[in-house]
Length: 396
Length: 228
Image (cartoon, rainbow over all chains, first blue to last red; front, top):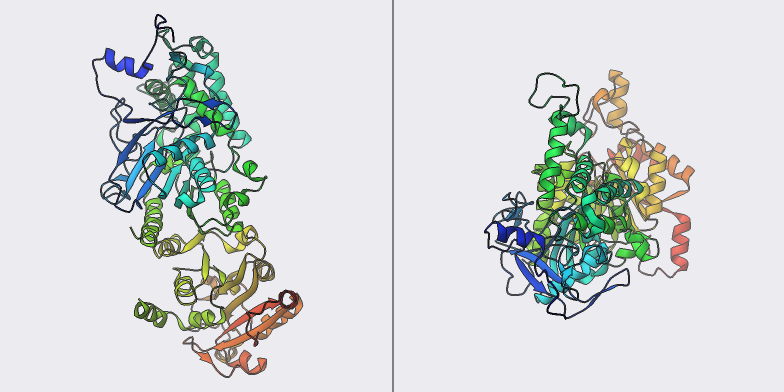
């Protein structure tokens, strides 16, 4: 390596924090998994893989109480602690913690930033050790399966033979399905929530809108914006706004915002945010760019678009779960039009066809896709029962 | 542990116990409309069955989940098509046939999904029912049929003879039939159809397609009891 070449040894989010006089590490624990090179589904090889993760609770003596939580597209490893960058509570704080549903006094919970993510796990804004520069769009395209294999490598590294439960919603649910299909003997129970076994044309379409918004932003610089002092904030913000609509329901939006005006008594006959919903979406967009990397957004949405579990198993989803002993709990939400109930039912149908033990609930709510993140008592009651019975069967 | 399960067995509704007796130990069973999982639990722990349920109510589903049972929330009128052909040894429909929208299709689906079906339903030919209609000239209400006509989920009530006629029409074989009194106790006197149709409060039937039976026999299905 040429030592005279300028080297950026830290991704932007660390440099930002140093500038602001913050010396903590927002990534949590980072482990280097480079010992085993990762051959991606694309065929590309990643020689350097690091994973940033958080753990809660303690592994018991016979290592039977490990729970892996898989996060969704725009979330990260900070599932049950205040977020180091935003200061907001952990994204599944309602679910995970001491005495909570996923009881960290009882289970050892692990949540890792996904491959391609932007908070410490190898991804486009992390520095490529071979070049000393951030990967940018030289980062290879990844898949949900790649993410899961990296998580499995982490679990190996931690010396955990198998998992009591793998759970997650949305893209997290896709990882859960992949985990269960790929490592049936390592997954005692699986909870794919508000998810799908394949990304539909409509799902891909919304993602493409988001990606085009990012790439149309001049500050994207062909993906090479690290170190320029700018980033495609407008593009990423629009991507977030469009996506955020898909996380809510029409009824929920109407109830929350209606046609109410934002801090004004009358229409302005201009393009300011007259309506509360406009103001809300703009806020969502702007706050998102503070914590998320635009290139990561490109890569992770692409991974989701490529997700079609049946295609990996000779075109038949049931093949993915043949002879599995994993206990499944599938849940969907009535007003989720991003991954509607029919998608979950297709998973249940395949699991039944494979003879897998499967339970399914559809929760009535107007909270849309985001319901899985919220305090939905009926959902939590169902999940609690399933988990308690599974823990009993596992002898935890 | 054994004592615990025995206590459970004693607690179970008698008609469910009778249904449980029809199930070969170690079978794969689907219970349609499994409620809080009483029968599923019994089959799992007393008959060593791999038992699954379909239930429409959230309370029922949550009760099943808490007991560690596999249950799918759904509507039996629409969701049976989602189940794989011959995925189960038995498909059970207890006290619900008369509430199904399409009775024929339900029976056919049950015998597609399972090699055998077990069906129980209230007998509208029961003498007390006949007498009430005859004397009062009103839709009968009994302990088994305990809702007024405008408020009952029962849309396709039938007598035992009606049911057997339908089985005939569909080419379905009745392998076993049980007569149950209003307390759910089986009557040994399940003799003639005429007798059952008059004196049974409820009937329980073990059904199959004769063709499926012949096929199973041809494949050397030696574990089935001779009585079948």
